[in-house]
Length: 114
Ligand code: AMP
Ligand code: ZN
Image 1: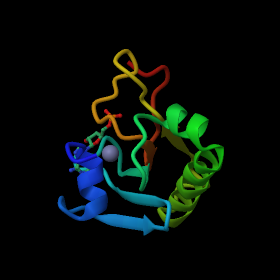
Image 2 (image 1 turned 90 degrees about the vertical axis):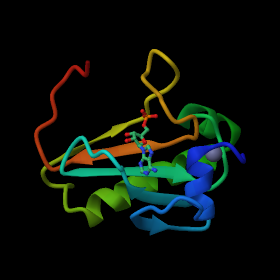
Image 3 (image 1 turned 45 degrees about the horizontal axis):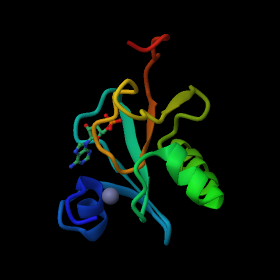
Image 4 (image 1 turned 90 degrees about the horizontal axis):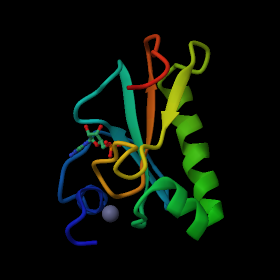
């Protein structure tokens, strides 16, 4: 989608600190990190949010989780633990309406979220 921020990242129109790229998935560091490790995992194709992506293409849902696990391993947070977040819709606090998983780690994360 031409007016989508993360589609612009996929096209390379907006620079990103990319940590993983496959034919279906892109992962890059969040521009405003909320933890020492904060990576966004997105599908190359535009979907409005993670559940919508998984409903439209179940294999893509699995690809997103697999990529998140690979990012966590590459970032060294598997043993210490980490959090996967998919903010969805207005009450979910979603601000960018291109599906993305947050991979957060490197410090103790509070629960419940605000
Ligand atoms: P959400 O609020 O779940 O929709 O998350 C959107 C995330 O995108 C936020 O954590 C932002 O800091 C992040 N973000 C916005 N613009 C960029 C960008 N150009 N590069 C990397 N991360 C971004
Ligand atoms: Zn998009």
